Length: 191
Image (cartoon, rainbow, N blue to C red; front, side, top):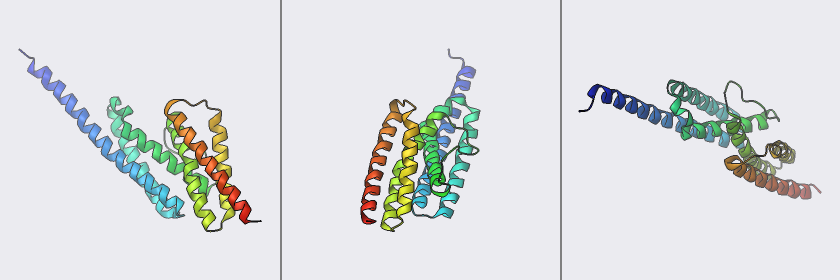
């Protein structure tokens, strides 16, 4: 015969974990979506919308982190990691466009890999912003985007990245190459 009390406890633990996991997935998906929208707002120079969306994303990430604290098995949940990566990217793009420098993300605990993953995506967004700037004849902004992306690649080269982050680094290098092309074409127009 089965120990009904024991199995009831096991079922309760399992169902509780599944419920928390679903909650993390939902909250993290919303946080990721807000971060993505923030990036699009940043590329359109809508800083107010970007800041509002980043605030929403940050709050949702904090909410998910509180749930994760209650059950460490949730710490590796992919949806939460994806939301963190997207938030890092959005915050770093914001820093690059508004402060002309990139550094630590305030009030957010991150693993180095999470920061690096988000950082690797920044050159691609700087490329998009440079294209927009070039069409608006804001050629100095194009050069700034290139210089920031070049600094990012210079830092990443020294990190000896492997696996997932190596793939992301290769994409960042491709974005830098595209930025070089834009800078070259802009320099021809200035002649």
